[in-house]
Image 1: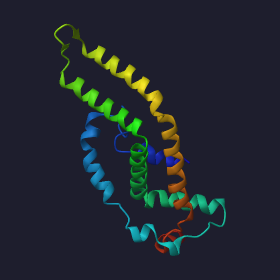
Image 2 (image 1 turned 90 degrees about the horizontal axis):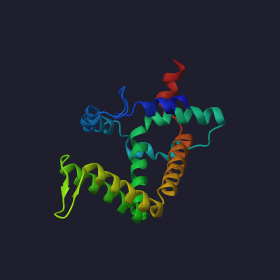
Image 3 (image 1 turned 135 degrees about the vertical axis):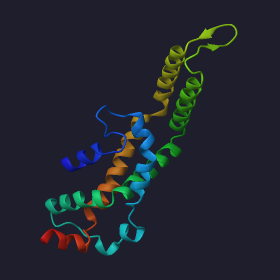
Image 4 (image 1 turned 180 degrees about the vertical axis):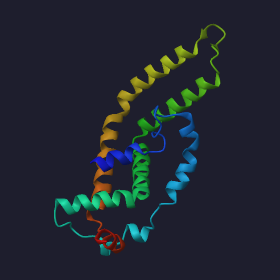
Length: 178
């Protein structure tokens, strides 16, 4: 479990001392390109000759620890595809995400100035408050919690199932014995 949490802590946007920073977000495309360089081929990822039932919990844990690092890019792509699938199948949640993103973008275009509607002026902070209130009300009907729980479960079954049943490559077996 410690190896999983250490891998999460090494995510490109979260490795700063002060959390998510603007520099980390700017450098993310380069990090993504570097991450995609570690993509394993589909032949290697779906090598059915290496699929076998682990002998015990210890071997399954060893396989999971190895495969989470070895296939990390492939697993990230699986998580991304499952996330896209969950948004496409939950149109209310997709609408909510698009609504919030467009609302935040629209408010940021004001540049801190008040919105003048002719008959009234609305401050940027009031617009953010209204956006949050409307998003929370719409969020009740969009069922984001059930979608998140489905995403966690589906990702866990797919990724941990593959990692547990995929045997290590021959090269790694020789590297461990030396």
